[in-house]
Length: 607
Image (tube, rainbow, N blue to C red):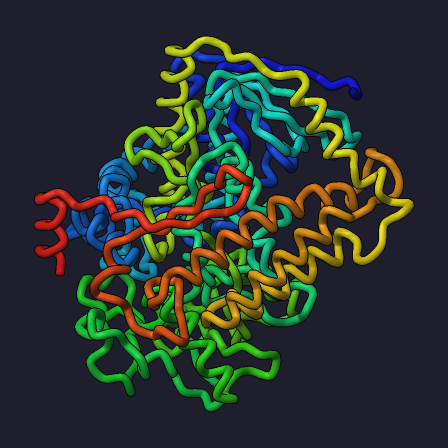
């Protein structure tokens, strides 16, 4: 067996985005030794691409806002499949976590009286997103890193984890390799926190960075953890569609939050065509007038462009299918129009949306202060993930915790914009605290060296297969999988198409087991892709199987063959994916966690 480096930590965190760093800082503050493993370099986490802001009911722009309103908005956005305990904890604790981040040095935009400024966002009743222009995620990572590097945390960069190690039922370590030299590493830990983000790279068009291959979901699943609500994949309404080299890159919802409107090829503001009855009272009284662009006006009407993301994405797809899209297969997003209402519009846009201004200038040659943008839906976020306890964030496997996008529960069937960043802070903090407590209460486990030998053999198998390999290589299989998921398990789904996708995924499993890789372990991205295939295929199969089972349309899951919400059976169940005794993927239904009497009363009052 090749040599490997060994490390020991009380708490090991896999992932160094907002959730991972929040967990690391909290765990370290509890007095335990902490290690953080990240697939990329520190500071390159996908959290930096979160632009619009973090949702917290500070009430700085509209003092009618409070945690009760935030809780009700989150539950409504999630179509009431959320874990209500998580939704309540998030709404209550988000303001404290945002203020804590500010105390660590985060530089938020300010109101005239010096408070943290908040902006409107889809699905939120009041302006709630604390932001730093449109670079909020970047500021979050900068602040967490600057604070975290002084807490005695060990960082292991450019290391990919390929297996969790167990002692009986309990997780006691992780096995991986460094992506630069290909050396193997084993991490022994009393508790492990998954904070690996999403699965966007399973789809062709995505806003996600290359690391988002579903590693945390797949690693936890292989270790025996349950996955919940994997059918709910969010497609952000606005990603770039042109030029092809940047297709899918996010165009922040902050553009619409600052007054941007969506129009079709006829110049018509089509979002007024289909407003859910639930939201009618909060839209403009006269569609012909559109939304009055106002700043700080408590009585300003909310634009239909700020309805929930699933709804906006489907409206855009409808325009494109009807032949009313833009030349490159999207629709138009116009922020320049606000100059009709705001004298200093150009300076305002550049100040509020600096990243978007430079992104379109540099990548598309478009000045958004003067011209419209072409945008279309892009795979953005998965609400489903590792099933966790709402209070402690522990999974169904002892010693294994999860937080952030790879954990399920908070968002239900659809995430509200901005809830992701405050999610990272709130539940990263909780995962770090309870993982540290678990580590203090449990001794070290035993790692089976024979198992590590088998893992190494499997990891190196692609090199052994190269001479006699036949068929497609790792890149070709990944590309085919992305096309399959995009075309058959995308924004609009049907039973037949998802069953076709499942058949293709089974074929890809067979092909992946035969993939060969040339060269050696050093600087070999082909080998990295071959190892990523296991993760991508696992999460893709989970999404397809869960989507087939949910025979209704709810939140981000839209079935063309079942276009309505089921008010009965499916309204009361979450889907659970688990690994069977023979290694096959199993799916079952589980009753949703009931709301308390107080939570029900809050929702009734807010409606």
